[in-house]
Each structure stands twice: as C-alpha cells, then as structure tokens.
Image (spheres, rainbow, N blue to C red):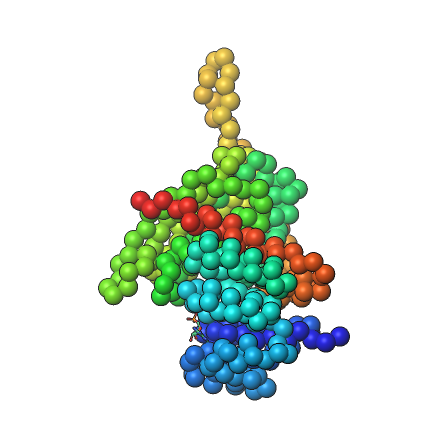
Length: 328
Ligand SMILES: NC(=O)c1ccc[n+]([C@@H]2O[C@H](COP(=O)([O-])OP(=O)(O)OC[C@H]3O[C@@H](n4cnc5c(N)ncnc54)[C@H](O)[C@@H]3O)[C@@H](O)[C@H]2O)c1
C-alpha cells in the first residue's frame, strides 16, 4: 500500500515531535520539513538527512505527491497556512488551539469538508493513557455524579507572541473535559489574569472558571510564570475522587474512595458525613506515546470513506468556550 506523504511546517519546539512520530509510523512517509529559520532546518537535517527542506511553504503546496501537511507554527498563522493547505486539497493536521477565533475555525472546518480533506487538530491528552483511564472510570460510573474539575498547569514559559496563557494552555484541559464528558455545555465562563513582564502584554497568569450544565464546574489555573512545572488535575464526584499528577513518573492516577454528604434528620438538620475509604492506584499501560497514538488515529481516519472530524469538532467547542470568557 502507498504510504501517506507528509510535510511538517514549523520546526520550532513542537514540529520535530511530529516528524519523529510520523517517521515511526509505517503508514506515513516523512517528505518535507519547512521553517522560516535556517537554524531549525539545519537542526532537523541532523536527525532526518533524507528530508526535503525549505523555508518556502509554497514548495510543499506545489508538491502534487504530498498528501498531508502538519502545521506547527504559532497560532496566529494557523488560519492562513491551514486555508492554503485545504485549498490545495491536501489533508491538514493543525496544532491546538486550531485558530485564534471561532469564526476562523468554522471557516477551516467547512473548507475541509467541502474539499473532502481530513482535518485533525492536535490534542494529545485525549490519546494519553492516564486520561483514557479516567474516562474508563467515568464511563463505568465509578466516580458517581461528577461535581467539579480542577487543574494546575504551570511552568516557566514557553510563552507565545500573540495569544495569552489561557489560549495557549486551556485547550489541553478543555480537550480533556470534552473527551471525558462529551455532553458538557458551558453556561458561564469567567477569568481573572495578570501580566507582569515589560514589553510583553499578554496575560502570563490566569484563573479560568467554567460553569457547565448539570452543576459541573471547572477551575483551571494556568501560568507561564512559575518556578515549577505542575500538571495536577482533580476530578471530584459524588462517590470517588480522582487525582492525576502528570509529573509523577509512575503513580500518575490515584482514586480516592472518599465522600462528603450532608444528611438531615429530626434531631439535627445539619449532619455532615465524611467517608474515607481506600486509595487505589490503577495500572496504566503508558508505553506508547500519546502523539503516536494520535497519528495512528489519523491514519485510521484517512483510510475511512467518510471522515469523522472528531478532533475538529472538539476544537470548535473549545474555541466556543474561550470566546465566551468574561474577563474580570
Ligand atoms: N499539542 C501540543 O501538546 C503542543 C505542544 C506545544 C506546542 N503546540 C502548538 O504548536 C504550535 C507551535 O508551537 P511551538 O511551541 O513549536 O512554537 P515555536 O515558536 O517554537 O515554533 C514555531 C516555528 O514556526 C516557524 N514559522 C512561523 N511561521 C512560519 C511560516 N509561515 N512558514 C514556515 N515556518 C514558520 C517559526 O520560524 C518557528 O520555528 C502552536 O500552535 C502551539 O500551541 C502544541
């Protein structure tokens, strides 16, 4: 079977990870790498000497044999580059947050469908074994009624030029939430954030609170200006509470059999009951990189007659939530 020929545009931090995983997958053939900066082309050449390299994106568009272009450039460039990919009738892999507005995202989505091209938006957490384990717990109704979600997502950088910390990092949490709970609908979205650096006016620290339907709430704290890297998520339900610490190399998920409820009776109308049970650490098969699993998902999709734009739909729902933010 003919391999799917791939070009990657944007060889800064993330693009080389795409190349590494496309290269590993036997359904794909890595053909082109493209970046405006010569130094990034020189770097990638060391590991992939066979790659055709260019600073001119047009070279990829003009290559009739190229099937798919992955766009890993800064978000403000996604729409223009993505539109050109789809106009040249090539499949499009595009980085989160997809585009910088809901309108632009919808345009690309429609263009992909019109031109019979597949559109994949990169959300690695959906394909990440610990998150898939949480999904399994949710689906088996182990956590009971979901109450709320918290996330601490901090590090020093990597800052983006044209989008703030919310647009850069919140898509990760929102992709997790929409994957775990596909029927979530945002009701109110608030944010308070701050900027501290001279000559750079995008928020570097922010809190995001999202009230969803069914009284489910997400509290997301994001920072590019933190001394330590934290990736700590809790999901609290009526029966169990889940802690996901992505920094922990082994015990990433802990399930706490804990419960708090308040009961009324005739003697005392306020009778809080605290239940403290076992803490379990489920086994997680985390041998395969989430990005590779995602590339395999793309491969399977490309082999269907009718595309399912699953990650594109998630991206649009995420941009809808980000567009609803009321800034305090
Ligand atoms: N999926 C993930 O987990 C994940 C992780 C990190 C970054 N990202 C996303 O990947 C994208 C890139 O982020 P990054 O951190 O790699 O940025 P980066 O700044 O390190 O790299 C972007 C590269 O794109 C190049 N570029 C810009 N415009 C170009 C053009 N027209 N033609 C060719 N090259 C061009 C730049 O020269 C730069 O080298 C962003 O959308 C970001 O949100 C995703």
